[in-house]
Length: 201
Image (tube, rainbow, N blue to C red):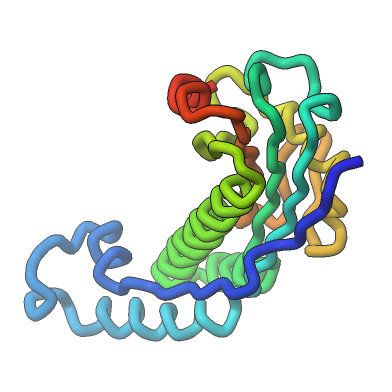
């Protein structure tokens, strides 16, 4: 049976306002940026901190429990993982957009994307440590929809992980709700050579 291992004990998310300004097209020095734009970015950054609810679920499967698929070939075990920041931020973005405040909605949506990316990176680092603790070599994070693994691979992840416990569901077209969610797997190999060779497959 898959071994559920929860998620990282501590998930810390920090936002860089400068990254949001760059995405808005402001690559000049901060002092040259319109004060109104800077104020919106700062306020929505503070807003994002209140709206983000990071959650992670993961499980480790033995090779016998894995599908007969190229992406799992030579893997001794594999970790499946699901990350989300919850629905609150997305709901606020929708209200801003519907109300015509496109700038704030866009800024907050970008911040949500930054947040879920941060959660997934922390989950990846934690799962690699879990693999090492098992005496195995972890490969690279790989998500359904990447080359070589069709998006329908979501079915495996959602069949193993109790996604409802963290408020995530899968649509018939394999999209996750809330959208600010991310799923992936990490293969664990018996030797370093296999982990290195098969990083992208």
